[in-house]
Amino acid sequence: MIIILFGAPGVGKGTQAAILAEKLGVAHLSTGDAFRKAIKNSTPIGLLAKGFVDAGALVPDDVVARIVEETLSDPSFSNGVILDGFPRTKPQAEALNELLDAKGLEIGKVVNICVDHATIAERLLLRGRADDSREVIDYRLNVYQQETEPLLQYYEDIGKIVSVDGLGSVEDVNSAILAAL
Ligand code: AMP
Image 1 (cartoon, rainbow, N blue to C red):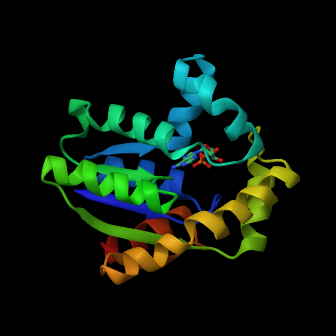
Image 2: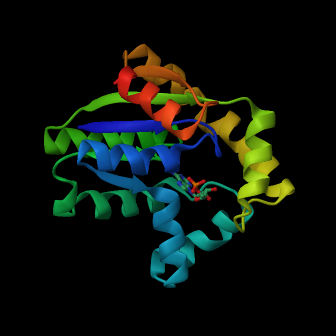
């Protein structure tokens, strides 16, 4: 089971992905978490990614592909995975297709979690992560609109999108996602 949680930074992908992974008995891959861990441990990928993550810019696609490939090859992912924060660009979506093709797997659904941008900015400011300053938030939302949002159409065209209102409580949003799947 391969499920992609899609949506702008701050819509609750991470929270929902963790709950879904637990409920469905599959793994959870957050590329953001993977980068933060790599940065903390100063691994070669972490050193490459740091400047981009700090600035709220996208890490280059080839670096992202490396960390995703490495993670997905772990046996704990054989039951399926909730992808959180990946893919974020068209080349990443294509890289994912290749990776899944090679394993004989297919994307189940792409869950688009919808929250308006004013609410997102408020939530991110409250979260207070290192890359959650007002300036970096605005930049990340802009990057989302330019680079990532166009993927919605791509997944829509192949019939994979289900949309869910991300404004309710964590439990309500989770129930809505499960119902949509
Ligand atoms: P997130 O935790 O998903 O908000 O990601 C935090 C940061 O990690 C982003 O602002 C990017 O710098 C980087 N990042 C995470 N996932 C990706 C991805 N799929 N492509 C490029 N950069 C990413």
